[in-house]
Every structure is written in structure tokens, then in C-alpha cells.
Length: 477
View 1: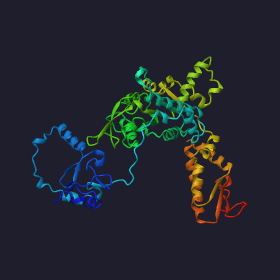
View 2 (view 1 turned 30 degrees about the vertical axis):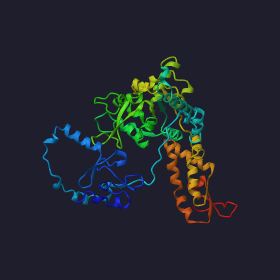
View 3 (view 1 turned 45 degrees about the vertical axis):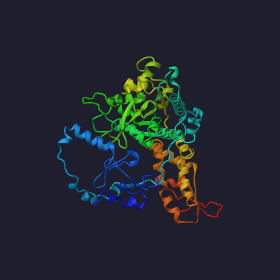
View 4 (view 1 turned 120 degrees about the vertical axis):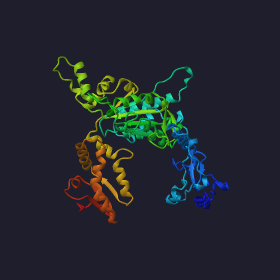
């Protein structure tokens, strides 16, 4: 049996077989990959060929030996089976062609990313100006983020020969759900062209328990950087729902998803070398690992922190009032103004340990979204939802318009859902379903105007036929 008979397709494309000294250059359309970790030869190095067309990379081979050694099995004591008795033919017949040691290379290989330079980092006013194009409102939060990010990359590229070591400026974002915390970070990473990893703190647990270890956060960053270690070490990590790992009160059992997770995140936030799995979110003996230095990674944590304002109000009540029954002044009644006065002591009372909040020195508070803000979010940003629908309709050569009163009604309904800007998309999808279904059927339609009456079910949208200058009174939907 020819141990390379499964590489016929590789030969046809000019790749040849290993036994014939085939061409392993980039011109070959196919390449070999490890039968265990599934990484191609271009990623894991020269493969060891076994009978039956199986290929094993050096990492997997070494981990197999380590597993034997840790289990106490002496490899030399195992019975030696002559290679002639090994029959892999049945195994190979049962395996689909895509898993027989050969797979197609990607037609378009990604170009290597250029190394980030300090000259490429925009000044704070430029960062804020770019954020203004995509994010409505949140002026203070955008300014805080712009300065913190600029100072972070100053620190990364600073000269340490003078003995002055600038500390990290990790950021804590506090704001109600749907106020734009994740969107701000995504936009920021896109503008800076650095890899971004978004993780959910609710899935993190202490090492050894069911759930994700903290290393899974860095694994996502490494994948976002296309396994480029140097790019990953200059990236951004956003940990959402950070308030969910607050210290649990009155717990009799071990708190494996609260205070213990905060403890394990300390070294990562401060800056240390952490071993993470490559191409997976959990460690196991068969997955290769890489060591990431988190010193130059910017960590941004975000959360809604419910009931935090009550803690702040209690503090302000004792500071600004005289007597036990006195109320805080009217200017502190607004939730946004109350949250803007948050201190480290308030966060400690909420359940965050002092060591953790000490590693997040920059605090940015986001405002609640009002109806006016929601209307602006619908139409003003560079990637506004209305602009997306208009582009979809324009592909059918139909002009789409929304009356101001219709936008106001959408904002009112979104406010009732109490989920911030997230509700806008679902509400629009519901209203636009019939429009997106019916309009492409009639080539004579040139323009559609969405009115408040249509959204309230009191009629159809206003339709303008091609070549007509005046809008008819009402057309059926």
C-alpha cells in the first residue's frame, strides 16, 4: 500500500507528494495539515508522516508523549507492533476527503498587518472627532476614552531609559444597558486598526470550575489578531458585564464566579506573561499554547452596575444634608448626575474588591438615552439604522423617507422597552417587514414615505410612482 495514495488530488494541482519531493511552495493550491490539531503545515511546522496518510505536528507528538509520561506509562514497555501489521485502510476509507490529511489553501491569503507606530495614533481631539461620526451624545465619555487611549499608547511607545515608568490607564465604563458601551469600544478599535476581543464576565469562573478561565479572554484577542502575537500584545480587550462578578453578599458556598474571578484578573490587568491556548478557549494537552505579555494591552471593563446610584445617593445624603431625614439636593436626583459622582469607595461597597478597582484608574460614566437622543441615533451617525435601510431600498432603485413624527413614535416605543438603543433595530425590523416584502414586487414605485399613521396602523405608507412629481394622498400598504 502506498502511504501517500491519498494525496492524488495534491499531485494533480502541482503540489506533488512528500515522497517525490513535491512542491510545498505558496503556488500549491493544497497543503497538508495535522490530523490531531487540524493546523496546516504552514502554521505548525514540518509534519511527521505516519503510515496510512496520518500527519502529526511536533507539538501534538510531544504532548502525546507528555500524556503517557504523566499517566505513569512507560512507552518502552509497550509491545512493539511491526508496521506491516498496522492497517489504516479502513480508517482512511471512512474519513471524508477533506479530513484525509490534505486541505485546500485559502485563495486569498491575508496581507501581513503593519506594525503599529505612535505616529499612527491620532491625537485626542481627532479620536473624539472620529467617534462623533458614529456615536451620538456621550460627550464626556468620548472625551475620557480619547485621552485615556492616547495616554495608553504614549506609555507603550515611551522611552524607559530615564527610569520613569508610566502606569497603565485601564478604563471602567459605567452606564445603563443600551447606552453604547460596547459600540464605543468597537468603534474605537476600528478607528485605531488594532485587534479587539470582547468577552462576557458572566461566563468567567475560577480555574478548575465549569466555565471559561480568564485565559479565554486573551485567546479571543489572539484569534482577532490572526495569531500574530506582537499585534495581540498591542490590542484592546473589552470585558462586558463586569458588575456581574461583584463580591456576593451572605454566601455560604465558595464564590467561584465573583470575588475569585476579580482576584484572578488582577495580574492580567496589571501586566504579566500569561500562557494561553492557540485556536481554542480552554487548555488541554493537545492544544498548542503561546505566552502573551499583557503589559501593553488596554483593558476596558463595562457594566450597568444596577443599584450603584442608591449607594452614591446614601453617601451624598450624609455629606450634603443635615439630619437623618433630610433628602439630597434636587441636582442629585437625576441618575446620570448621581453616577457621575461615583468614587472608588462606592464601587467597593457595590462588591468590587479594592485591588481590582485600583487597576481601573480611569472611570467613564455614560448618560441614559432620552427620546431626543434615540431620534438622533436613528438618523445622524455615519452608520445610522435609517441610512442602512435607505441603502437597501436604493438597491431596488426606490427612495425611502421617514417623517419626523414617525421617528418620534419609534423612539417612544424604544423608551418603553427600557433597553436603550438596542430596541431601535427590533422595532424597525417589525415595521419594515411588509415594506421590504411588497415594494420590490412593483417596479413602478419610485419613493416610499413612512408616516406616523402607517406605524400606528391607521393607513399605509405614502407611495410615489416613477415620473410623478406630486405625492398622492394615501396608498394602500
